[in-house]
Length: 634
Image 1: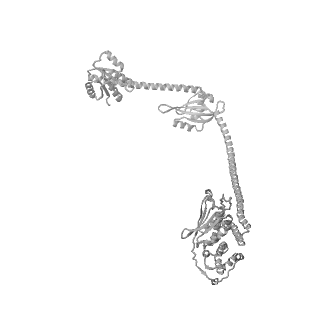
Image 2: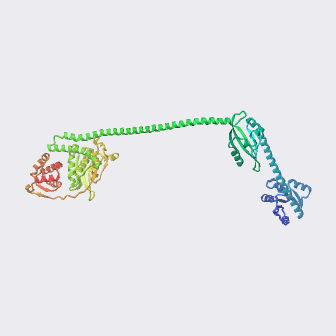
């Protein structure tokens, strides 16, 4: 057994050393402190078993140190022996004991006396601790007993005054006691219970699961509840709820069981009524749910039908709008077609009487071709869009196609006094369907005339883009195309309203035809325009083989090989004045009409120049082969 720890407090180190050596001889553990304040700190930290304290010390003397130690819960139970050589009177002794010292020893200290007093103080301290522990135990037990008595008193009152039936059994469920409430509820006393039901709760209960319930309560040591139907004192059936509770002592052993029977008949009847009501409610709820499901299905069907009706109404609205748009479009289209056809028809009907017969015929032919071109635009656009349009591609000189196109619109230019110039390069050959490209040029020229003011100018020209492609341009001095209208130019039925030309209207199919026709040739089409300055439409074509022209002068008409040529009556009427004039001129032989006219223009003869002009105006009725044959026969 380990020895006690002793704290020695003294301001003389020599005394501390002497005491320490003496105590260590008896295997005590010794702590040292040089003043009262330091001693209190050491005591609070290490909690020694006993303290030996000097009286007179600096900082804090022995009396002050004892007072401090006794004021602290952690150190107040540590016994303190006062050691002094000066304060030895009985008054001093009394003072030391009053502040809390347990003993008093005078210096110089005798080691045997010191050990005896230390052992005595330790025994006294241990006895005090034991007594204190016993007192606390007694106090705890007394309080527990008081609480138990209070609980028993309360339980007694409850058991006596309650209307519930209370049964107390031993640890084996044998009856020991019943309260007055039991007799009131069932009309049976304790003795009657023993006689009628036997000694045990298990034997006397009519509950079919009583063995399982009592076993569960005993094994789990927890309260269990069960419900059972019993007969009351007047032989009426009542519902009883039994609460079975084990009584457990401090060791955890079950000593008794308390069974409390509560009449829950009204509650049970209410539960039954509630259950019946709930069943009715549930049945009604199910009916409502079925009705709601049916109503929901009906609503969904109505909603679906409504959506269908709305969709149909929307479709009808859209169809109606489309029909209105189509009707408006049809009316507008009809109006535009009539308008487009009316102009050339008026031109046919109102050819100036000042024109000679040949020019009147030419003007009417130009107007007729213009009308035909409009109709063909409408028909051919759909063919191109459906991929049903066939092209007959050949190498053709663009100058002749351009001359024919210019001739077709010449009458329109004259009406607006527009100067039209053909600057297509001589000898420029492209791979084209001649009729289709001629219509492209006519459409572009007609479009330019519509939007070019009186006394304006139109130029059709060409240039080489590369060794493979040529570019044809139609430039006018018209009003130009506004930015917000440019995207409509090549659209089907797109319209550009010319402000300065009196609100010109058109189907817009001419430019659509141009785009489809040029792209069918493998080319491109486009335009550039500036409002107030004019517009240039252009398109590209693949080049063909260059035509090489050979020409020689023929001194006499007899030198030309004579061949027969068949003309229609219309062609004969047009050519008759030309043939008559040719008799007075020198005849040239060549393979190219353009080259013929170019050479003839070098002759200063007034009559020859008139003939050349007449040829240029009427060349649209001939093809190159017939023209050459005509020259040969002339």
